[in-house]
Image 1 (tube, rainbow, N blue to C red):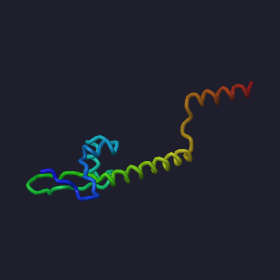
Image 2 (spheres, rainbow, N blue to C red):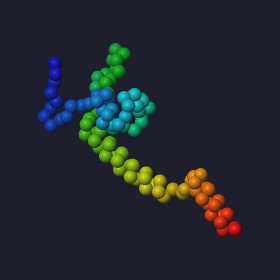
Image 3 (cartoon, rainbow, N blue to C red):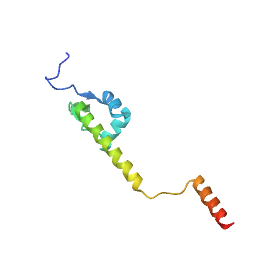
Image 4 (tube, rainbow, N blue to C red):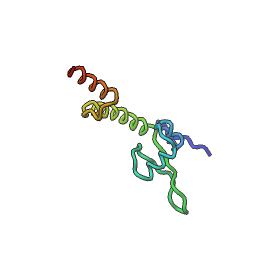
Length: 106
């Protein structure tokens, strides 16, 4: 029997349906659920009786909010990267510095 959701509510998504929206592989979702990793809130449907695991479901609104926060955090991390000290110079930078030093000595 196919039940329709209450008026104004969107149907919950399975992990397989949520995976492309989250930009994650299905196994990554299961791994993050079991390890408490970064995911939108998970809704468990069913119970743990008789050796069965509850099914995972995601609210589409929670996914949209989670994605919006990820977009904002990318901007913050980019700004933090710019403020970081430079690391080890590249090969090209090392050669250019050496050539500049040689020209200055001659």
